[in-house]
Image 1 (cartoon, rainbow, N blue to C red):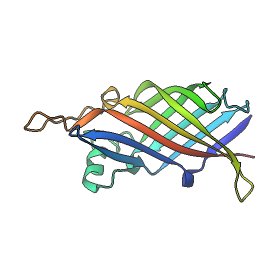
Image 2 (image 1 turned 90 degrees about the vertical axis):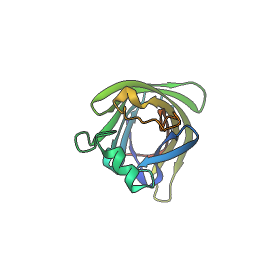
Image 3 (image 1 turned 180 degrees about the vertical axis):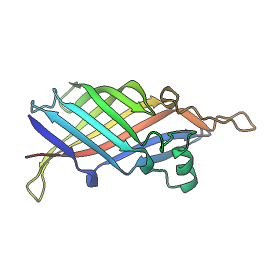
Image 4 (image 1 turned 180 degrees about the horizontal axis):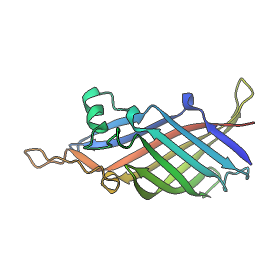
Length: 175
């Protein structure tokens, strides 16, 4: 059984949300961790665990970040961590997979499906075996209890319900 740990220096966890339905705001989590275990060389039997520190959310705007950490959204003090546990990692083509799993935000767990592109494997300057993946998906924020919303005077929605997820991860083979 091979165990892979996240290389946080070479990974990023971002999300995109429509603002006023005319532009996109990008945010990220700066503190996160992931582990993958796989026996098969093609990772088709992989089990994946991921978590992020909600308090590490960053959108480039301190006031907005504070609002996202508040009870209106993530309630970071009460629910400091969001997590994902993979339930299936299916190979679709040579470099494409479908990752199914359960995402938990604010103690609400929902199944999600993510598209995964395998970037390849490489040995770094230090002799560490690394693998890379790009992961994308969409979730409904309201399905996780992130239900704050507002409408402009003109009747426009301030924040979309759909959140696009984009993860670029590099993992280091252990042992």
